Image 1 (cartoon, rainbow, N blue to C red):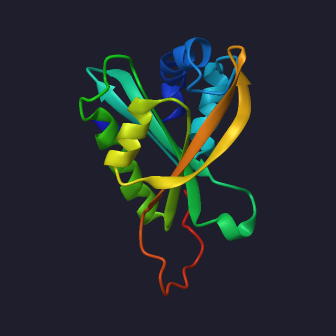
Image 2 (image 1 turned 180 degrees about the vertical axis):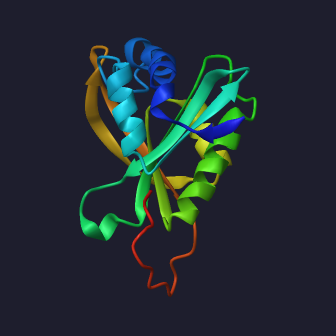
Length: 171
């Protein structure tokens, strides 16, 4: 089941995310966020969804501002994290597709995602969901004793040609 996250999900989201912080270069955080920090992120996101399996959080996807300047208000940055063993099960696709629908309803036109290279699992998911390459930031982050590149991809959520759109309808 996919549903909106609430601050009550913060501890579960933090626990699921912690190994990405401590054991991988997928996240550029160096210390796992606390449940309180995660609760603040949940309430501050454009949208935050959780995948619930038998009463526990098995994944989450969210969107937050792409950049702070007013002209960027129709774009957002997305992220997705799944518990280990959930890759290639359809869970990522389901979470992201539900997130994209929510973002379209809010008036967003473009979604961006960044991924530390190499990360073929994330690159494959984003390709399969229609994200296109937008560029690579070279040696932009230092983690686990090495400089890391970040690839950026983007996906249209809705057309912008000939559009004079109002501001997104944020929650």
